[in-house]
Image 1 (cartoon, rainbow, N blue to C red):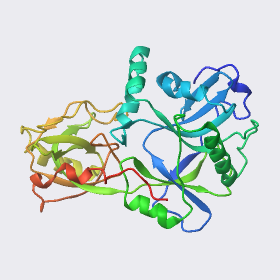
Image 2: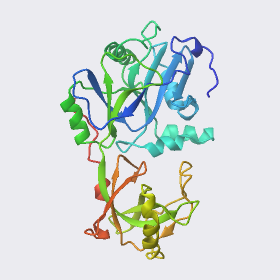
Image 3: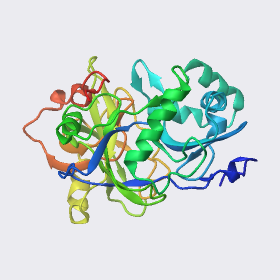
Image 4: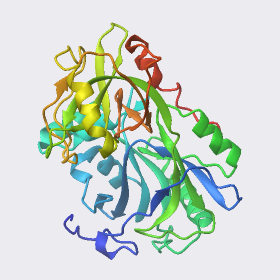
Length: 347
């Protein structure tokens, strides 16, 4: 938990307030009681300001201010004081938000953090306002009033303040168009009830992601750490130069199928595996998989479902759907997961 900062704990909405979160939904709600907003690809946080004191708090409650000194400095320089704003930290690289650039900021060396901040400044994408202009709490106010307060806040700070105002729509057809034509910066759509208060720490919003599919080459696999059975398939796609790049994994393998699948994979072992970008070790959350991986001859093609691509890779684990014996490995190219172009939203 972040340490207390003098002045901030006296705010009507003090640090330690958990952000309101969202639960997954398969489709946008159809009744007219909802507001729709883009789900951005960034670090969610609450921004607090009281006099000279500023902090950025992640969902975990930890402070992000030391990793984003550029954002903290711009917030401290704003004319508006005090404020508590809910939003998303983002970094744009070549016109698209980069989650990798955000992760690079989480480094213990202050000199490196400041260098990165100078090279690629971050922006705070604001989408909720928890204090009114007099410093009173808006926690219990409906979304309609909080949105009006947010727009007034944004008008008051002027342009080039490092704070962007997220767009919204109350037309389901517009929000559906966002989902149908996801741009490079979007992770989906967030749905908020118009008359709903800010329910800190509760999953009171909805989030809808567009699930896409891709046909991938199985370039390798990992064994389970506790048994000589396949734990996950390592997935690859060919780049323009004909190299097989590792782009993610799937571990949604039925226990009843592991033994047969393991034998099938072992007959393909010893191949070149990935000839482009290769897998590293498993993430710290993947405790059920071994760090070692076995390269395969690139013969098997699997169709998988994914929700988001970042840095040319699947952000999360994918879901195995079926084998595709009708597809040749060479047909499995990066074009399947390329951004759908552009970043502008039509509201």
